[in-house]
Image (cartoon, rainbow, N blue to C red; front, side, top):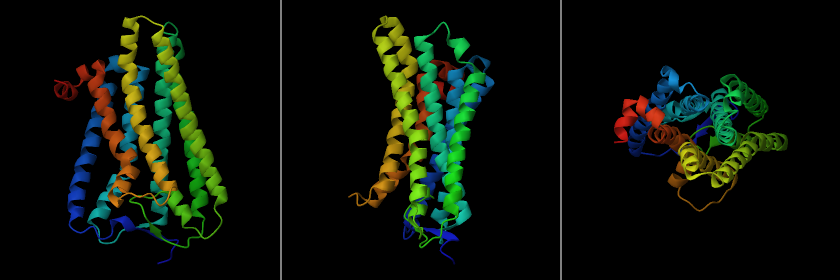
Length: 305
């Protein structure tokens, strides 16, 4: 087989009988992720009282979690039971696009959530005239189109590279790892990747931090009752943000820093954390902490008792 046609996932090799335990755990986790996020999405969709910007964005977060994990779990579960762990170059590029777009979509949604809460707390009287479903939809579509365009351009360039190797030391296709296998100078793609990282991850994260800092300043100057109500809606967003940010930073660090003294198992978990923890933690945080969602869904209402 030509090096440029297939890639091998080397970390699936020599797992022995433990692969069956990993398959069972992964299948259960994937089912729970789909179930919890479906509960959030269906609750928001069917209940008209939840057709508000904040809850619509929460449901978007759930839809994105299902989308991102769909790009990883089915393939990983198949590889755990398979004796050959190869993937075609086209399928590898596609998986990379799905996972990368999941990350950028998550950042976009979290940024819009921060903006929504900032306007709601700083300008409550003008909130409904500023934050409208049409306005949020437009912002989301613009950010989504931009990120897909950037990721697509990088994928096209990566697909045209001549490969000098086909062994991926990952359990999923990572564009940076694919580029490192090329025989040619990939400085242009690396620069493009850095640009995309800055515009789709770092800048949104900076705007999110700015919004929450401003919210905290406003709350410190307000009454205790206003502060308490504000924290009730802001704290879940901050928990979700911190969880996802730490997960993505771990993945980026492990992809670009070599010779870290840690076990293979820990390295794999940290590189997958953004695909494992946020998709299952987010619906739990919102389903249990936000009373409007908890009261509308019997599953979250029973768990909170």
